[in-house]
Image (tube, rainbow, N blue to C red):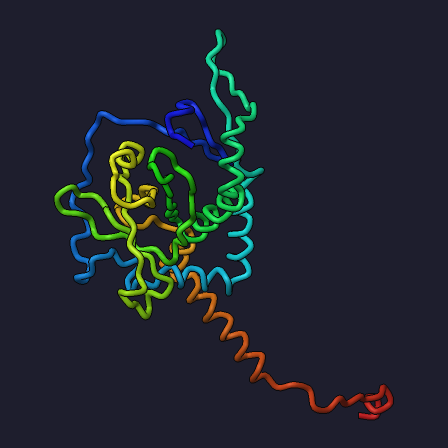
Length: 268
């Protein structure tokens, strides 16, 4: 599907709406941020670069957090992904949900509902989404959209000249990192990805990155479970469980049951 075929095409889920823009006349740069990255060419995620796995482990081991996360995902997904075009009428703007065969075929080819569910999973669990865009052979269309698992993704350190994140490093095992098993992808300009995409001339696949909205974050956005980790909530719950289990294990149970009759008590 060509991005400028439908300039007023909106794609929307239950709670969010986004518009595809063609070009921007404003040149933007990020300030230089987070200079210290332990000498790595990628920005570490968390203090030990294992924060995504820690978050997922906490979700999987805490029934309250798991159910809350499932609720958030279901609410975010809503009734799934749909699209519409806008028509200007005398009284304002009217949304037209009429089917467009080319768009329907593209959404079916990309299994768009499953893709949307996967992206919602990454966003609600880890607070970050990394989407791969695969161009057609002639590079005039976005042929496929793919999910890059957030837990496996690490962004390159900011380029000091243009002050942009230019690369995404993809590896399923960051604890035992091997360079020959890491895949690199180009990351589109976060301020104007469509214009940047039209100028690329090398690879057929690029990463579309959502810019963090959390204050003082440049690489990875804050997730709700990360807040619980930072607050010490999980440590307190673990300590409380250990204390209860210790009391239960060490308490004395009944060995004898002695029954005294009324006559005995009267005699006494």
